[in-house]
Amino acid sequence: MFAGLAGRADVVSLLLEHGASTTAVNSLGRTAAQMAAFVSNYDVVAIVNNFLPREELDYYARPQGLEKEPKLPANLVSPLYHLILRTNIHPVRVALYLQDRRDLLDNSAKIERVLTLLCEKQMKAVAEPNEMLALKFHHLAFLVRNCAKFARDQDPKKAGSKALLEPLIKTWLKGRDEDDFPVLLEKLLRQSVREFPYHDCSVLQQLVHTLSGVEIGNEPSAISILAEAIRGQKGCDQAASCTACGEPKAEKRCSACKSVQYCDPGCQKLHWFTHKKHCARLAAEYEQALREKAEQEKEQELERAKTKTEAGKEDNGTEEQPAEEDASSSTAEPKTLPKAESDNSTAIKST
Image (cartoon, rainbow, N blue to C red):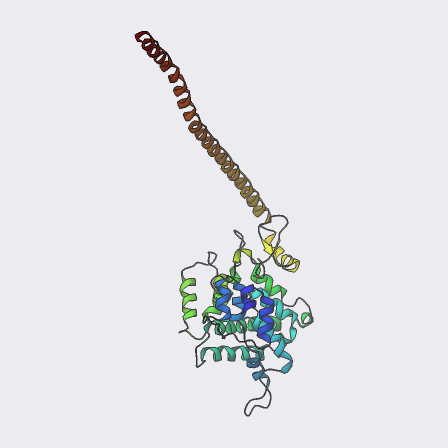
């Protein structure tokens, strides 16, 4: 609870992995996720909402009933569990993870089956269906199937390559000529939403309603809508995400145009083949934006100086008015003195 309030996402993850409850409430009747959302710690909210107890995955690593072997080999539990806990469901980031964990690709059929069973279990929960997790498991199974199919179709000589899925990733990232928008990636994500089997799901209906009115290439994009569904409405700022893999809080920018950001040099190198066509144009737009901003700030500074000068003149005018009144009163007093003297002299004469 206090780790969520403090925004310590690493501590929250550690506590959850060691058995902390996501449904426990405090004296106010609020869960840890609700308290974290109250203080705008949306990263913590995403971690709590995407958490799955390890026991639910270990269940599939043991033979059940008349099964002679488990649905999931024991050596795949840990890598699959780390994939499930990830809050970034961008296809490029998932493909990069699968590329590093080749054992998941080699057993893609089992991985896909387990993810499908987890999706079904979340939708058929007795207490309350977790539609968000069900959609996430379906999306991961869809990406595993596509990546495994691409890996099987490759030349056997390239099977051991460390960059086995890089051609597929570049196909997704390739942007169109006019604005570098990744059309194939958008179509892939829309296909993932379209294949979700539970059509009565309210989250799915909301996604379809939003995407149906948006043409490919316009905002909001499919990845931004899916990210909001998985992480929450304010869980991810797409403007500050990695242009290649969607990782949040990307701090590195292209040194030439300073208009796109990346989480690491690897993503920048991966995205350069399509970004280089538009880098010069983006750099010119960035410089123009800087000039316009400088001119606007200069105008605002002149306006503030003008307002300050006018205010100073008004203050000086109010200070000079009492001085004139004092001067008029001092000139009026000597006029009464001769009258007083004449009155005294008249009184002396009469005596």
